[in-house]
Image 1 (cartoon, rainbow, N blue to C red):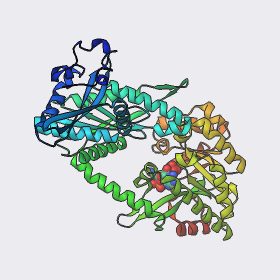
Image 2: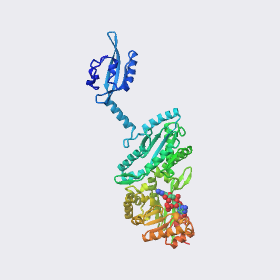
Image 3: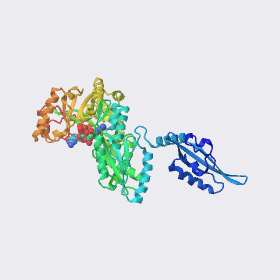
Image 4: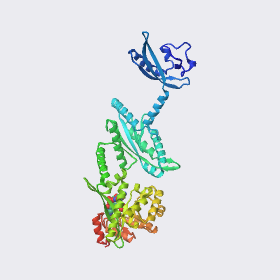
Length: 535
Ligand SMILES: Nc1nc2c(ncn2[C@@H]2O[C@H](COP(=O)(O)O[C@H]3[C@@H](O)[C@H](n4cnc5c(=O)[nH]c(N)nc54)O[C@@H]3COP(=O)(O)O)[C@@H](O)[C@H]2O)c(=O)[nH]1
């Protein structure tokens, strides 16, 4: 066997044997010991005539590093004698590029975690292994709670830093043999293999939840999020990659719906509910274009004289199969799937149109109130859009009231303050809904440019019998009066409640004692009647 001098170069001239390299043993010297068998095995296949064989291996460089090589052996016959031409190429650069491409294709560029493709590959191997060994495995589907709020309020680069830190914390909660993947914006999948201890997976889930609840520090500011986790296990919850991921996802949705910051194992009952949810989602996406949404109107009454001062527009859905649905059956879903903004603008346009119609028919003038969703209100052009809808309906801004919950305002007070001020300048009436449930400070309430505050029905419910609610309601009324805000009591259901509120100076009330929410024709009739609710 004769080798060209180039074969020895990378390995080191100084280490070249004195005698010219000869024979298989000598040829193998530069090849890394671990790879010699691979090369030898490949060359043995040359025993088959006319066969070209190739093999990959590594050679040791003089500096201690290694180079990737590719060997191609071609048998040939010269003057009746069989020989072999062995061509060896340094393919280190090509290998590096291949590895780079593989890494890019299998990893998330932001966090460096595995991506969905790699997770699926590993899960497929893990399922095969679990099938052979009988050791179960678990898939954890993690979705961050309130992450979108960070992106919306602090910007995407802050959001990115939070995601990087999340990835770091997740890795710390797991063994090296487990796989953590980022599979979407704020979604992560984890593969836990060979979890024979039944307490191991819930313990990991708890550890992850605790680690996500620690505050995140970015750019000198502190951010709080939590995580919801769904868990599926092999073989109980599925026998293939798709089923296990889908079922962990369903369980995650359940964890989220049950209050966030927790984990749930998948169960077959969840699948049925999830099908129901998908059907509901599909129907909701078409409800507006199919004309299935309707606004109902509940009167607001001036307690002193019993006259209708306004109405709250409350959305209803005529579901083609389920009949008339109240907002709690579909508003949370509309929020989740991003449809709430469209529904919200439809409600504003529709409420303005009805209010203008009543004015044109010379009914007693009233102000129409519409509920806002948080995502709708955080739109930078919110005020311009409101102005546009008012102009389109030819309605004066003072005839429109917008209701925001206290929790909504507290979520991002500083950013929303400027929108509130713009709306105030426009002349729209602003009202804080569900007051008393959101822990806003008195100083904060004083700064809020709102006209009226609705006292949450939980304080009204047990009036006047419950001494604590009596004290709280009196305190809220005194506070609102000193801040010169109009007080509106929600959920007034009895005459005793009405009298208590009237005696304590509450200006307006809304509730079944006066009227439930009504379809627009019935509300029109009530208004035309110039009905006075005072007794
Ligand atoms: N973003 C949007 N949210 C909307 C819209 N329309 C409604 N909503 C939200 O749904 C919440 C519930 O509405 P609804 O089921 O219609 O309930 C309202 C009343 O029917 C109910 N109510 C009224 N009087 C009483 C009463 O005496 N007792 C009692 N137990 N319930 C009563 O309260 C709801 C109105 O309350 P509030 O808004 O707090 O004044 C609704 O609260 C909105 O959050 C929409 O278009 N967009």
